[in-house]
Image (cartoon, rainbow, N blue to C red):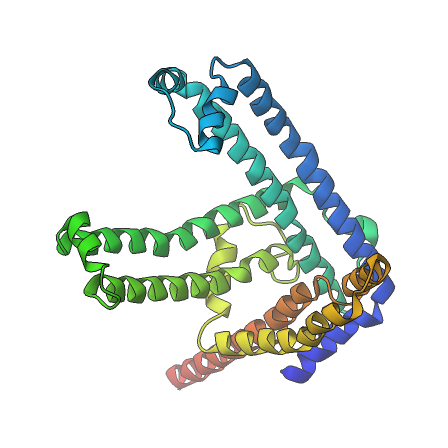
Length: 324
């Protein structure tokens, strides 16, 4: 396993020039898209904020100067609350666009890295910078994945409020927190740790669904039902594979750790900073994406295919026994 993964990473450096040109193109395309598609929302929000009846200078001044907000200002704000809600929605949409298009590059890197592992070199023009079907599939996988990750958060909030209610509501909880060790703090901490572990584990289980979208060998056509990608990601990441996943991430982190320490030693002026940043970009930036794709091919799929082959052999043997 380790030999195969390190060989895959070596393939990146064998295609060093192609890899870095592709990195620049993918990065620039994602930046261009999120600027182009998020800017209209920001502009509309700013125009509405400028034209709406709310005097934002008078609203923000007491907040920044720690003075009391006059009652008439409260009334003016709440009378025009729909303008505020519309502006917030537009800003959220703009931020979502930035996140979506900036994160879309992980899909493009997955396709690029899969081509290296399959002993191919993806032409610069053939990466799916503006493939609408792929973008739509990515959107829905991101949507369903987000809903799955939201489950432990909802469970945490429900159990947290049940805990608060069972201890006698907020006043009783406040009294308990006067002591360093108390029932509320201990149970809240346990609940928080369980929620964090669940969130990390579900994130790991979903990770490979994004690679599934661009793995044309396993999925020749883009699936309309994008939940197929998530279900498959859950299947192939079964068992204790997460330990191998964590181990490889730890090895990569240990490899990169000395460079973080060297940063303080090497960087003495703006020129050394530029050279150091350029070196890190060319040598290590987005190497993590290659590691994840390699784990997908060498660990997740390899073990899963072995299980499927064993199942087929068992089915063949049972069919032969039934014939006899």
